Image (cartoon, rainbow, N blue to C red):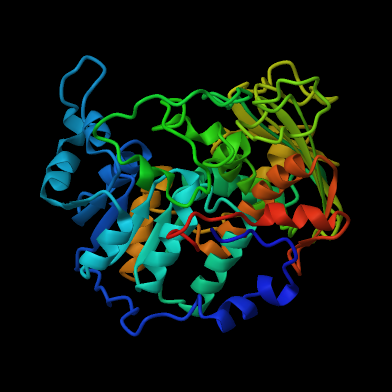
Length: 471
């Protein structure tokens, strides 16, 4: 196994050490094919059921040439409705999948298929960076589901790779970034409608999967599932259990990033976009007990990590924010911020999820994907009416996020959520999980990518990889 590194230098984080070690040297054939607006893009998918099927259903106008999935029986269930009949809305995708070349292991797919222009990566979180890096090194455009990566270092590796290959079109699957409402939120905040913002609250009802639980005993795996490939980069010897695959992996430490990783890409996106605070300088997490902690609880992670805590409150301080210091507080597990003074009774805070911006001239609140923005305060509506549209609108809005990627590949439209925007967002989310594992507030230097007050906590910015799956 490759050991996780705990003492990464500034040179490491900025890509110098990685480049000198050869990990970012592209093979001679790693050039993206030039695709005209009239061409169809040759698309592959890794993780073809679940969210992958939702993404790919919007791409059936393209050539779906290959798919990699560890369980084709599970993929087949995506095309069956609640009552057992075929889903008419997904029949074009089923027909495309039937024609596509099929692989269990995406490493074999990349070796065998040289006609892939672009790939959608919709695997569990622990595969994202490994699959994306392999694709990008081969000159393949990538659409990667959120969270973009499992660790901070992985995000910086992908960002460096994208910067070295600007013709590759990269997109994270945070579809709210393409929505009209969310873009209007950014315009209103930047337009000063609620004045200076020093306080933001974001919350979600997740998890909707097992979390705060001890690791279950393994059971026999389904015959259709390649469990070894599903484990992939995860350096654990865990047997199969349905609490891991195919949906519930999000809450288990080796495979997912919990609720913050799942929903932070949507909820945290708009505050960071609108306020441009840079990376956080101090992060602290308070949480319920860790899954697997059967002893008298002292708040520390158990030695044998099982699942993440059921609920947490994470406070981010942005001490170098562009417009002055900013505090952003994250709540999950059904927790929500207190109702601020001045909030009218009619302005209900949606328990499913939302964001509240508290400014010195009013407040703005919206739901998870930036939709349904509500302005609160005297004179805010008049000020909002005077703010012009300044951000481009994406064709199809939230539902056009996948085709925005295709149009960007063909040179027709600017990309919505490239890695240059997605990596800092992803890093902010992941630092909340790092603070949780450090069990203390962490102070972070974004320029060097290092925790400065707890040197040992830098190991949580990286991870171990199973042999054959190293980044």
